Image 1 (tube, one colour):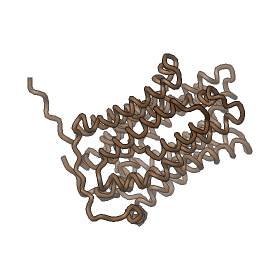
Image 2: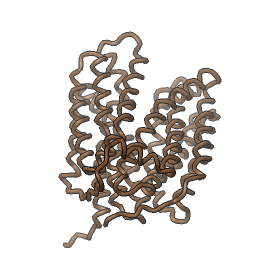
Image 3: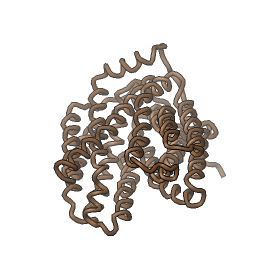
Image 4: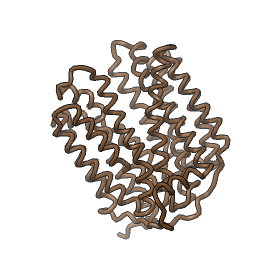
Length: 397
């Protein structure tokens, strides 16, 4: 029986999405258990502070390195960057399973951030290998794969931690990252590298920042990421105030439900042909702003869960449309630099967002962190009015 022909761009998409799924499982397997691991290491004082530092250092070092890895990927390819990130982080997780104190864990988390970049490289590879008419669909599939992996990861983490302990679970994570690293090569994912004239990394970054459309999109993403993270410090507290007797159960469910709607919604964005990508971005930003404010007004777990679920659909549309516009606004030979800069900008939002949300929640009341996030999203919507659709010039089948 003859197998049906699958175009190269589609074959690339499915194989890379599988790698993103595996990598996302790995990234979310250990993260929920790091505070518990600190206690196992014997840390008795300032556990919350060190938990925050260990989470933040990974984002900080990743944000510093993202534009550099992005520029290198333009010159040498995205597949090597996926392999570098997967193998490098896999080794780091094996080393983390052997630490004896919190300082060693802190240092290794920083190194892990330096070596990160698997999913940004995967997104860039999909963007550069998809035909223009399939770009929205392709990035929606990758986003869905990442969301499903993030939902599945904590489940895998809980099972592996129960069976193997947290150290054994870290080793399991390292194995998953090795699999993700070799998958594009073992599956013979095709990539064409067109590096163009040789330039320095700093010149690549400077050239990216001279693109007005990209600068606007980067600013929109900064506001969006800060808004998303602004509610993280207070969302568990809001849940606890609504239902103190089942706070732990509901917190896990409320956090996960956005991932479910994101996984469902991301592929659907590619089926919207009536409106332009920039219009989808603007409408989704406005809807995200409204539903973020409604979260702060929720008086029951059912209402909060429903609002978060609907929010996830619009958030997935923002992510997919934003990635598409960045891919369209970049030359094929500089998409790695563009997405690298994007991830650096997002890291800034990941650091500033919780600070803003925590301050508003402490000084004005828990709902105000949501109102602050809604205001940031509305500002992103206003700025998106200056975003225009453009088409990338070079793609291959």
